Length: 120
Image (cartoon, rainbow, N blue to C red; front, side, top):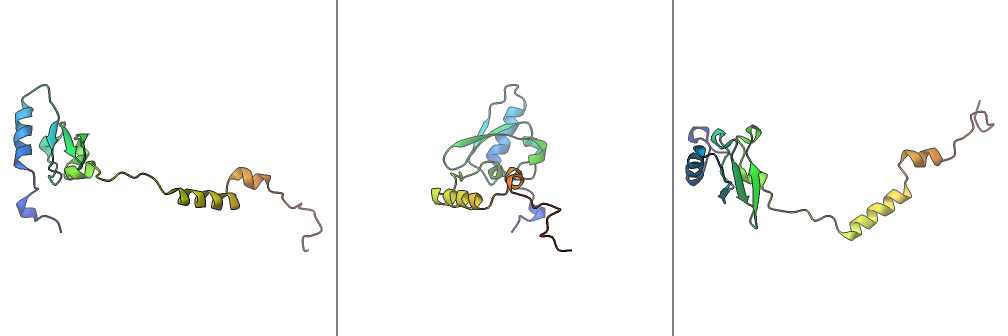
């Protein structure tokens, strides 16, 4: 269920304070935050954030396209390590049994057009 429109987007008050403080500075250091549920607002555009994913901080530079999304959407919490070796072996066996490449199709013998096997 989404947030009520009349309430407006949720932004952690500490984030707003930090962005306001950095607005006047020329050297903008990244803002470190654990608030993944905060919505990105237009005031955040151009700032860098370090968003915690549960283990480490992921550096993110906020752009115009990110406005309206949550900070947590840009800091994945799970890392895909690949499929199991058994799945890889099964995939290799199935591709070896049925060649699907153009080179394999070209290497297959073609029937002669003028052969007597063709029905008239």
